[in-house]
Amino acid sequence: MADTTKIVSKIHIKGTIQEVWREITKTGEIQKSMFNMQLHTDGLAPGAQIRMRTKNGKYTGVVGEVLEFDPPNRYVHTFRFTNFDDPYCTVSYDLREANGGVDFTLTSEKVPVGTKTEKQMRQGGDWIVKTLKSVVETGKPGMGVRMLYVLFKLMEPMSPKSTLTSNWPLEKSVT
Image (cartoon, rainbow, N blue to C red; front, side, top):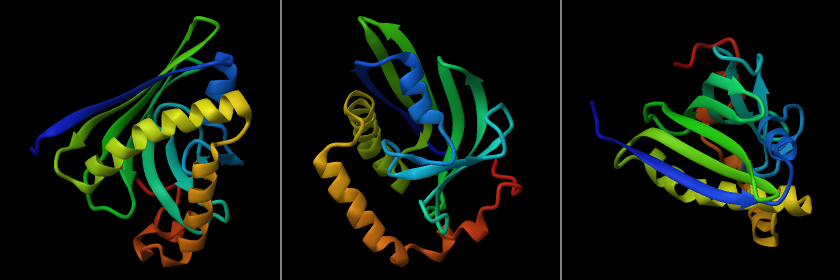
C-alpha cells in the first residue's frame, strides 16, 4: 500500500452551528465554499453516494460515499477527484460551538502521498475553510474567490471527458 498522509485545516467562524452545517451539507443549490459546486446525493446517511457537480450539472468534480452523518457536529465521506486516477481518501467536517461561534475542522485522511490529489487537498483545505468563514459571516466568498469562480465557469468546456456527469451517476458504486 502506498504511503498516505493527513491534512488538517481549522478556523473559527462567527455564526451558528446550524448556519455552518447547512452550508456544508445543502443540496439543490450552489455551495459557495466548495468550489461553487452543488452536492448531489441519494441521501445524506451512511452508505449514501455523493457527487459534487457544476451548476449546470454537466460535470462532476468529486465522488464519494457518506461514512458518518451526525448533524450538526460531524460529516465524513470518502473522496475522489474524477479527473485523477488516485485512490479514494476520507474527508471529515467537524463542528463545535465555541466562543460565540463555531470551531470548524476539515480533515483529509488516507491521502496518497505524492499524488495530484495530495497537491490539490493541501491547497484546497485552507482555501475551503477560509471561504466557508467568509460565506457564513458575510453571505458571499471574498472577491478573489468570486473571480476564480468566473474563471472556473469559463474553463468548464475544457474539462476532461472523465468528469462528465454521465460517467458518474448516483447509482454507480464508488468505493
